[in-house]
Length: 115
Image (cartoon, rainbow, N blue to C red):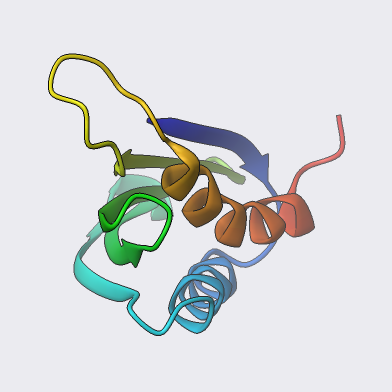
């Protein structure tokens, strides 16, 4: 499993669009498996997306769950990959997960809030 988390700035929907472009444009086998959108109170909102692609490194499929949530002017971003290992009792060869996460890391860095 590999994970990145950031606090982002920018337009909520533009960020989601850029995430889709990065993931789906980064691999011919990448798909958006499903998504959920929530409009919460006070204009807050959240989007959950699950992507999947074939990993040549592990010769299997890797998934990535992405959460983008806007609350009180801050956008919280989390992306977690899973799969990509062929071991039964422990994980080996997580290169496919890291490579999948790298496609989205550039988007997160582009919108990352300066600290």
